[in-house]
Length: 337
Ligand code: NCD
Ligand code: ZN
Image (tube, rainbow, N blue to C red; front, side):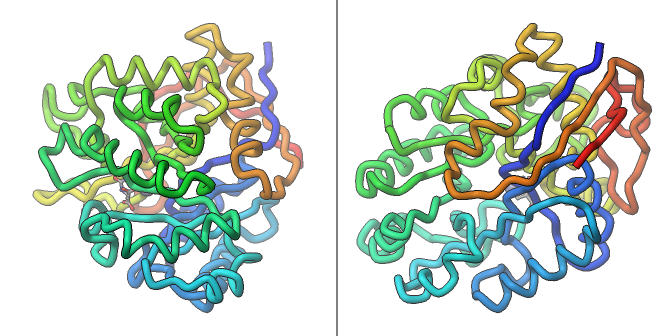
């Protein structure tokens, strides 16, 4: 029996730049209709010129694939309403990183002083620009996301008209916060639906499963699975596919990020089928995102999968994907756009 999915969207994706961009962008562009493109380049994408130039490089890298890069800016509390108005038409969201919390986030927000953030966040509310947030404090690694919930509450209550997207949530505390505040939404990755900390560090250390936020406890994964499998209307798929070259992962200072873009749709299909919730995958993978990001245009694409083993390549360029060299159970048979 074949499974058809329409216009899949990846609402949190790292496409990088240069040679890496050329390697990874075509892989997402082939199977997804669009993706929210993260701005954590070096230097970060924080001007209109940088955003337009990056969009152009992405366009060159994907060639004639039917794919929309939804562009983001790296949040700065100094963005004025005038500036945001000038870039509004090119922009889908703004991504806020706490300073130094993950890859290339050194220029992020230090301390969360509502007075300092108010002008930019007010302008974003008025212009209906969603705020995507990497929600981790610099506390103990397993507690960082749960500790950040109080910052989400502060943001959600002070800026009730601002759409706030809790990116790549990994804890039951974040799942609970979703239903407490009308303007909080979330993305969930594939890998956080699959693994717990045990898979990363319970046996031999698995660098290709190391990412920020780190995978948590079984009960956290259960909470994520519940809202993903039921396609809770406030959650959407965001792979957080974050490629790093093999030497940066298999090293004594392992870079954070799991590369899932080329196998995400197949493995999500398997997971939803396994949990008898395949009828909800369309909403999790596309419909919810279209409702939450109400103003995106989404190209038509139809993906047809069959239950048939597929051997995942051991590498794409210099990048080792999730399930490298292993067999997964669904294969993409046809893509129509
Ligand atoms: C991401 C990266 O490498 O850019 N890494 C990760 O572990 N997820 C950054 C991020 O989203 O935190
Ligand atoms: Zn990310």
